[in-house]
Amino acid sequence: MNREYHKWFSQHLQRDMELLVFGYAGRAVIFFPTRMARFYDYENWGIIASLAEQIENGELQIFCVDSIDGESFYNHDVFPSVRIKRHLQYEKYLIEEVLSLIYNKNHGNYIETAGCSMGAYHAINLAMKYPWLFKKAVGISGRYDLTNNIGDFRDLLNGFHSEEVYFNMPAQYMANLSDDQLLADVRNMEIILAVGETDPFLSENQHLSNLLWKKGIPNQFHTWESNAHRPHYWRKMAPLYL
Image (cartoon, rainbow, N blue to C red; front, side):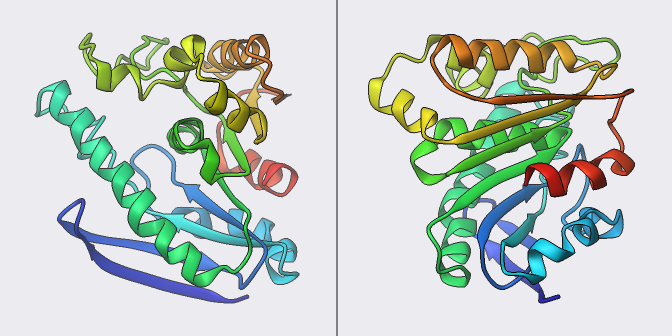
């Protein structure tokens, strides 16, 4: 399997960023890591191995990006407005730097986003905000409004609300989306949500799926037995949904 390591100094983040590329052709997938995880974890957990046949056949080219959640949403040492601004810098890194690498490495015209747990939030949020750039978005075991308190999972913005926060919570801004062109672009994407039947985020997934249908946006919604919020399950889900 073709495997490449890339590292460069990001102008938008003002720090070095790393990522791994698996494969040589096919649908380009920006694969976001889980909460506070790293770009190499999907490989270490055997999730890349579960996709080996699709990767080696030239069906998928996986770009495992790194996370800066510890500097943004999980940085409790700074005010929430600073957290969301850091997240927006990460977004610029993805759109202007990672996509440039993908355009250089992949000669197709099919790019999708995917992620598990916190990575699902990033995958769905990025695709919903820039739907004209992507053909597909896959959220596995995801949370789509980080301002909600759900069991042991607390509001990551500590009650802070702003326009920047609103426009980065898919379950909030999608409910009010009325721009015809944006709606058309989202409707043209394939959207897949998958979650365990006892996952604390089940209701968030149901809510987002229903919200999308109300906007005339087709989506697939899959529930799995148990919590299904572990690499053991993600190894089974990834080949089905990516």
